[in-house]
Image (cartoon, one colour):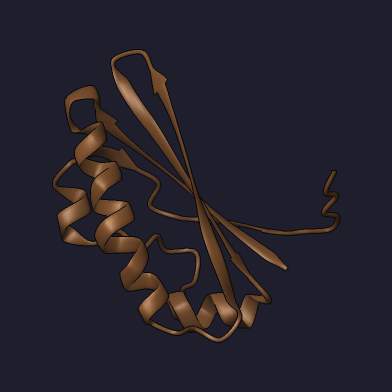
Amino acid sequence: MISRIWHGWTKIENADIYEHLLTTDIFPAIASKNVSGYRGIQLLRRPLGNEVEFITIMQFDSLEAVKQFAGEDYEKSYVPDKARKVLSRHDERSQHYEIKERIRY
């Protein structure tokens, strides 16, 4: 399993707008791509001074599945134009980690 991790920041007044955009538009659009090996996405949010930080963590079966989603330059971040309008800054590159252990309690 591979986790694809990405960070974006908004101004406080844009945080709810951005979260709504993610959950009602961007995440469903990602799911509708029907990428074989895509296992879902998590959204993390925290206030950070005069900004709000968002982290997305996507799960894929393999690096090949990530490439199917993102292309050969798979580290390049996927940020639709409508998201760029409310983000104040964001990672240009996503980070990818192999999940070595998953413990559930």
